[in-house]
Amino acid sequence: MATFTGNHSDRFDAAVSRRFVLKAGFAGLGAVALGGLTACGAGDASGSGAVEASKKLTVAASPAPHAEILNSFAASKLKEEGIELVVKEYTDYILPNKDTTSGSVDANYFQHINYLENYNKENGTDLISVGSIHYEPMAVYAGKSSDLAAIADGATIAVPNDPTNEGRALLLLQDQGLITLKDPTNLEATPNDIAENPHGIVFQELEAAAVPRALESVDFAVINGNYAIEAGYHVKDALVHEETGSTTVEQYANIVCTTPEKEEDENIQALVKVLQSDDFKAYLEESYGQDVLPAF
Image (cartoon, rainbow, N blue to C red):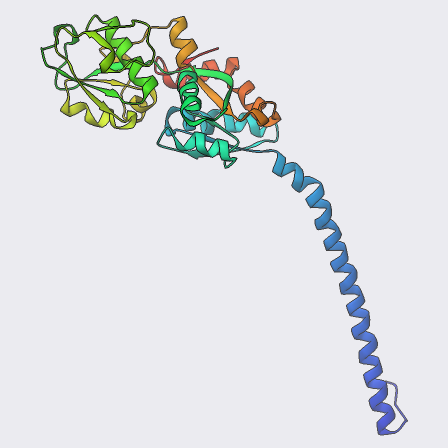
């Protein structure tokens, strides 16, 4: 061990100098290390971090079957392409479009083209369809009565109250010979547009989501496919349902919707491609049978 032979002051100065050198040295190493970490962070922000951000796709959807389809089928397919699919569930028909317009979500998947066109007209928006995916046959289900052919005079039928789905429900009832519309092709008909109602049917107009819950208090209910699925009803159990045909597919196909600015977005286009594939057709048949049918 070395022996220090200077006076007390010298020893003190030497110790201070030594500590200063050591601290300075460690500080330098810390600065280098921090600088290295900062450089790495900057690299991530401009490199992989930015890539990850651009590969995230947020889609608004109603719970069934739309969110189910996105989570159980589309998410894994998009993950293979490096796209993270985030699904936000909504239980109404208004907020998904509002959030798509505002940019809170990138796209939505819950509505048919006829509803979108009516929404744009009423709200002054310009949302667009980027692909037809599937359609859910609207159907009439038994409530307090079970024989639609022998419907009693004054029977009550619950129908959705939004313009496009109410018109769709009335067209289905017209096909069964229960009513006649003034314009037999009016897709936005209401009970005020009925020319003949020989049985004096009373229409209970409800928000689409509430129609299944009213089934026990009415004679019959015309239920949208997605809400029927949520409530545990199936087309095979219905009294009557829409038959596959050009009008049904063209007017009531459920779509992926976004803003005009995102029409060519790679992530959205990738989602549409996944949902218009042969694999998706097989998935629908296996998972939903007649309840959800491909529209492409």
